[in-house]
Image 1 (tube, rainbow, N blue to C red):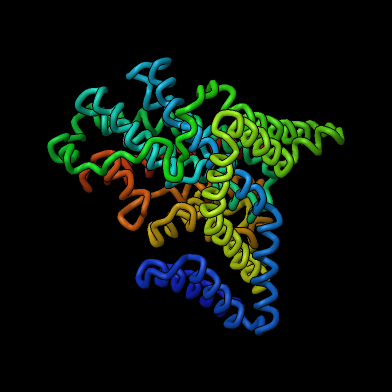
Image 2 (cartoon, rainbow, N blue to C red):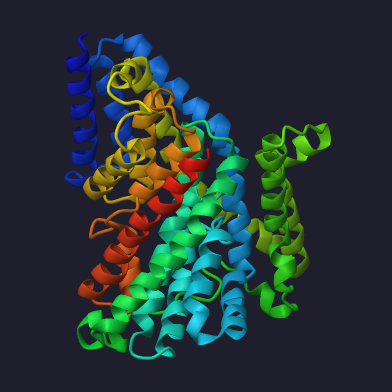
Length: 452
């Protein structure tokens, strides 16, 4: 098949996936598999080869990140039922005070709390952020809503074990420890600068409480403390200290980072290599979190939290796996060789082109995770021809997938209702705020490109 025909069929595939998801409300998992089937058949792979690539692509991604996603979600489920989020926010408010709490809360959510399933994290932290916002003055809700939106969406794609970060690292074959370190380099200045820019806009009159906030009686009620499925056993026992609660998760991340540093320094030790492998490190974090949960909640509560976490992880695993299906079919169809003729390290601003591709997909689909996974699948075959470190391609795709969170996003409507904003207000704090972060993230990514 000619190069032109392959490119046309690839374009039709992406457009069809977008239409199936947006227009016909088809589940993204089904849409991505159907798109992979069409692409394989239309580019001449044949029935057998198409099915083989789809199943192999799914299996390869699951082998690389499947256990990591499961372990991360399970850790988050226990932390949720230990009421770690509410207690941590209270502590941050005490330590940093009202003026700095948007930054402190956002950076904490964007980094430390990314193991918690997004919707659960939002349902718990949203009412807390609104309550704090009411204490910060007339623009307090705007500041907290923006901080929360930026933190949640950036954390997904830049922070291990965020779902988007794991998908990008897996599809582009980036060592997870390396992604963890470089993701932190990107996310900390991105979140801080984006919140500061939005705060300046609000201070100059861009926020009108009368038009941008809902009356209190119209705000969605606060979720039960501890989130869905919480067992009340914690009320009967003294809650654990926050350093104790988070020590297994933080220890796991330190182990992963240690492995990345050792690799960069070309230092080898079999014990360190074993303990710092992401699967082992997160497994140890899960075991430690389970032990803490059993000590302070009891075994039945831990089992309930794990059951809830397993239910949450199902769709996440499937969605990441089918991203691998599309990437495998694209590679087999020869897209990498075709686009490699046009893309290279000498191409004008290749990282900007990666960002733009992900941004366009996100505007069309309306989901940060889906657009990040789809763009990574499209980029995986051509990554070698770009001549760039794969971690930069992954981060640029993640940054682009943040651009213009809008009305088709479930996160948009949750932030709108839980933070007590009108649709007009949510467009300012969520759509504009996260888009600012998407653009700001290009700064540290391009800076990293100068040193790699």
